[in-house]
Structure formats: structure tokens, C-alpha cells
Amino acid sequence: MLKIKILFKNGHTGYYKLIGEEMTKDELKEFDAMISKIMRDTSKGSIQFVEIKTGYLTRIDIQEIVTFGTSIY
Image 1 (tube, rainbow, N blue to C red):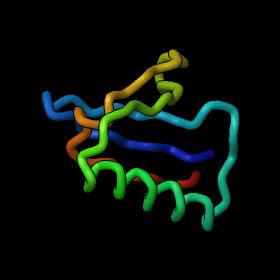
Image 2: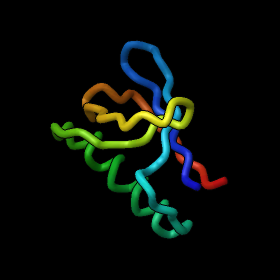
Image 3: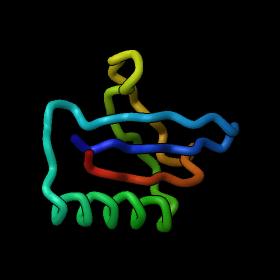
Image 4: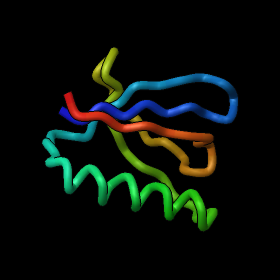
């Protein structure tokens, strides 16, 4: 499973996973590059994840992300 750690501008940290999909290491690299490009280009938009702790479907505004990390476990 892909685990995503996000640090928000307000100082909170969240842990998320993708909605019903597993990723290979190559797909993880593409996903990481895509999010990095969107953040670098200061594009507007949102991403939808499932919060690991609660299972809630969560929409995250890209402009609120300070940094993120990904891992497969």
C-alpha cells in the first residue's frame, strides 16, 4: 500500500492512502513527480485521498501543502 505523509501550512501532519489502488515503484515515482510539478508551478487544484487513521475520504487543496513524502509498505 502507498502511504502519503503531508505537512500542511498550518503545521498539521496527515497520513493518507490512495483510493482503492496499489502502486508499483515506477508509478510511485511518476506520482511523486506529478505532485512536485503541480506544487512547483503553484497550480490550483485538489487531490482526493483516504485518511489512514479514520478511513475518511479527504479532498486536499494543493496550495495548503508545504511538503509531502511517500512510501510503499
